[in-house]
Length: 385
Image (tube, rainbow, N blue to C red; front, side, top):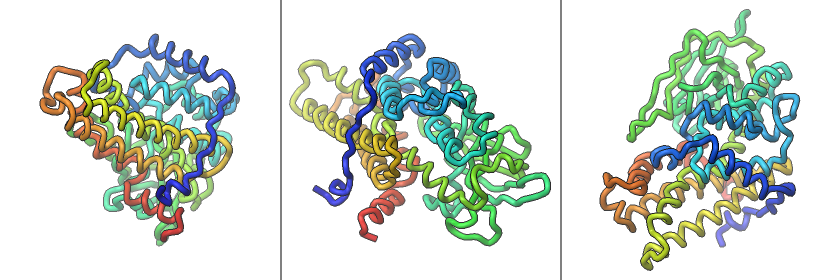
């Protein structure tokens, strides 16, 4: 067993009673509200934006599940929320519109935001009506988040912010961006950074699409040209942005989307293989099943630690790194073992899913921190650097 696995201390995943009934309710909701999507959307569903589905999900109480009721939440157990996410992703439901706001923007405001910000934004997020994107990555900074150069200058009116963000998921559909900005003149690395809630309808903002190989529009560039942001839209303390953003990333890295975002391909592989696959295909299905199950146990363990108030940054990085490796390798293995891999233009769901994932899966190791950054975190956690 590797040192990383020895360091990954599994925590028992023990949600409250009634999880079986909760799963049944979520499945019934999906059957009623989400018409069976085509292969192209089922295969990477957490990036598929559907405002009507998000609003229905919010009305059913499946967004903001763990938040206080006074902010529109439902005060459910964090591990109940995990079960809901798992069911949505496994079904290929279109959750991309509200995903980031529910996963990390809302919790960030609960932890670091002002009371007025919580009252103003959280109920709308919980209803599935307010969408938020993440303004972290920048051109020229590569994977080095501490190298951001978007600049904020305090004025009598508020803050004037200028710079550029890139790989900004769902910015074209979002109402707000939570941006990491350098607010201290001459500061370097992780000092002098502050987070802001930026209204994307503000003058001086230009959102430009980045179209992927499949023609999909998920990523964007966001240009900020002297954008006025009131001081009451600052999140947390001035200069505390690094501490806040690293805590936010722990929420992003270990969820079930790290191994279920392309689960539709596995489901379709099993369906296409039928009840009596040949030995090589049976072995592939067995291998993928084992890897999914192992990743699930690790992800659930990390969720249990978060639910207990721990900060499993190391475990979250391991889950993301291994999950990325799995989701990038799985399409290549399926391609090598199936007829669909011989003809990616064939008229079958398996071929369509495979063709899409072979093109988009390289980007999976960008989101939430690249492999190099993650392995640096893991190495430090193991005492290797």
